[in-house]
Image (cartoon, rainbow, N blue to C red; front, side):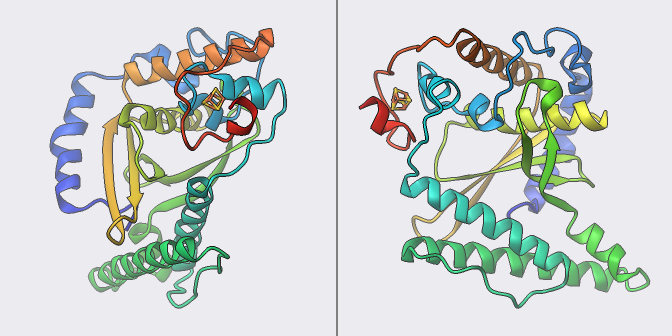
Length: 281
Ligand code: SF4
């Protein structure tokens, strides 16, 4: 499954990542439940959407200025539409599987290539969920159906949370939270710099910590691509002090732009997928 670790990843998590985290724990001041004290306490009284805090599309951060100060409406590119459709397909397929519905089909998309990608990821997610459920049921045939579902597909998908304590606006939906292994998952469709992608899992982990006061140390970015059929690659990582400080720095720099309402100017190299190309180019 998109969110189900294979044997090698399980070993990496248990034998490498968890022991490393125990030897080098997250400093207390960088836990989300310390949102009321520096450095986590928001420096400016500004609330930003999580995607804007974590987005690294624009070198000058002009996307933040355009979205929050100018209230510009971005134009969705093909890749952004594909990303939305894939996120929706994965979360809907898992929720269907958790109801033991393994026969439903995904919603139809008007674009043929997007539809093909959605079908691939849907079939994969349903097949893996069904296998996981059947395996667990065969091993625990004394357990209730609910018990088997909750342990074989232990994923809260599109879990909605408020990030207000940390200076985030609105309701934040985390792609997936594995409540048995305590891992935050974030799906990326296509390629992205690994460190930048880890900002998202870091932001979600901080929000979970701020709300539920439980430590979340492990994140996993799931890269999905469709170049030669479906490809799924996972980047399991420690949400360490550096990532947490990086997220806080991004939040505060972007909040400063909004607070001062200052246009930071255009970037030199604009990302082909930036929503605001029609405003800047
Ligand atoms: S088009 Fe370029 S300058 Fe404008 S927000 Fe996007 S990346 Fe930044």
